[in-house]
Amino acid sequence: MTALTDQLEYNTEREHLIIPEYGRHLQKMINHAVAQESKEERNRLAKAIISVMGNMQPHLRDVPDFQHKLWDQLFIMSDFKLDAESPFDKPTEEQLNLRPEPLSYPQNFPKYRFYGNNIKTMIDVANTWEAGEMKDALQYTIANHMKKSFLNWNKDTVEDVVIFGHLFELSNGKIDLRDSKEPLSEISSLLKVQRKFTNHKKTSKKNNNQRNRKRH
Image (cartoon, rainbow, N blue to C red):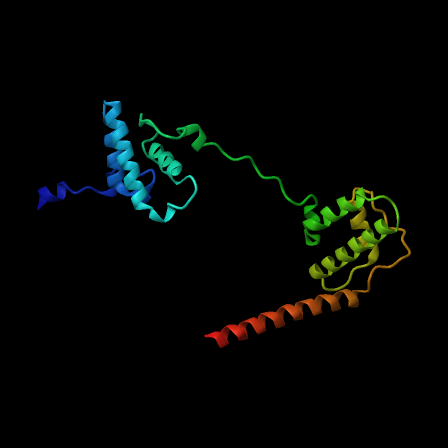
């Protein structure tokens, strides 16, 4: 019994699996291919291993560049030591460890996140328009939309002067309605439109659920 126990192999003592999904037997096949002295034999074993890997993941056969992915994984599991010919460019350890560039924050003014990113796009478009009634109308449309967005975030109230100030800041001073005598839409009117839209969505969802139940 002691002799059998001594022959047991524990996972903690085994070789680390680089891609565990393929299992230890495939890793041993790859290690065997790496150890072959003949380039011809390594090429033959590499193609055989690729075939086995493909059979182990049949759900990926329709994925574009499926074969390319398998060859990349083969070289990665060999710890980039397999010297075999590949129909694709061989990956390198440097490419595998390459870190992506940090993504820039999508919101230029994160302290006004409640307005959404589309507001900044609308403001940029308005700044490209020539002065006139159309541009004035667009500016007030933007301001009213900002007011409605503000009320979604703060249900109490908001003064027009606050919205005009934020618009001035978001437009880098190009849209200045701070001295405007024309008021924005009333809060009750904006909330009424919002409630009407919300109720419409709830009604549509309820009707869809009822139709689905009838089908079953």
